[in-house]
Image (cartoon, rainbow, N blue to C red; front, side, top):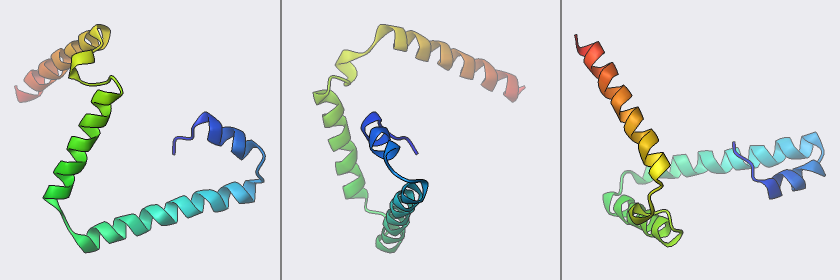
Length: 92
């Protein structure tokens, strides 16, 4: 579980048992969400709408395709090259 700085400051004032109860609550909610999803089944229209919403949010935050980081692109290209070499080696 990833905890932000604000949450860490809040947790610093909590007893260990309180933190365990707090985390258990989040885990119970996550399990209830998973159960509801299994019961509801796949919803392709909802999945596409969610994906488009996430893309739109990233674009608005300046993380869209038009704002690519050249150093990150170079790292990704190097990684792609590594995967190609590994795939070739594994295919022999």
